Length: 366
Ligand code: GLY
Image (tube, rainbow, N blue to C red; front, side, top):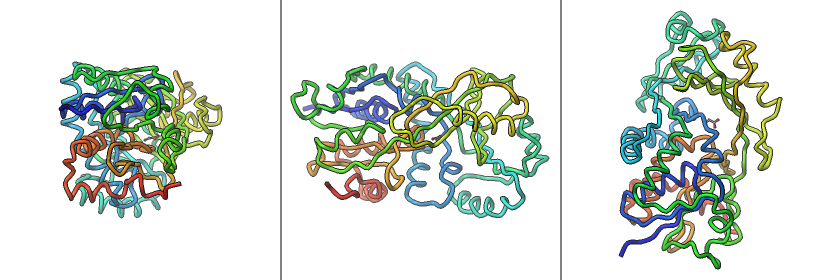
């Protein structure tokens, strides 16, 4: 008999889990309290940058991120084919610019292990950097170029996943409010044989129902975009103050703050001001131009910085996939595959070991 799965949360992780579970033949319902992709997923710049964003060491988290990047070609193909919508995946490569000669040595150290993991990273001197990215400030003392890194248009990926889910017969309950979120397991008409919690920064609302500690808290990311003269940015650019990503609509997205502000999603002059000052400095052609848009999302951060992926009840009836913090867009395919394997009971020993560091049960029960 077909098992039913209830996915709680319609951000990128919930939609991806629903899509993969439906592809594997489960009967899926997804309940989102608000708007699909309305929180961190909609606010994201869509960077798929495991080397640049997690550059310290090839630990289990880096390996999870890299394995997800490797799934992207098939993932994008499947989502686009099933939905008929483009997600604007740009294989732009990334440039991590530095200001001082002293930054070269640590960058070379990182590049050594990154290249062992397939980054094909290269050190770019100022003259070569001017050719690669003419719109960048001449202040740069160089950059690390990583051709493997890319980006998608996160709101379009959300829309395409939602359309693909619907095509596969997933019932999507948008604006389901607390019915879909908090009251599951009590007197709730929306049910599944299995439940997957993908509620991002709101996952803590299940602590009482489940009787477990869920150490996830919101970290606000303020972000803005500039209307840019055509061709101003060819790569994703990272600096120590901000990052910039050029989208097909001619906008340059610039992010992002990391503020502790509870569940507040308003932007502040301070947060956006820091981004505009960094933009003035690194992209001189945008000097003095005000952002066309500014917005914020709440990243789901965990106490140890690692996501929570795995069963949360002994029988495996409830699974959690949350706490992806800065890497939700990147980690969505691997999370969806892992969750679908857990639903099927087909996770092999190697993958069980790979996902063990992210087990939600690593935090003591309350
Ligand atoms: N991954 C980029 C950010 O969280 O700002």
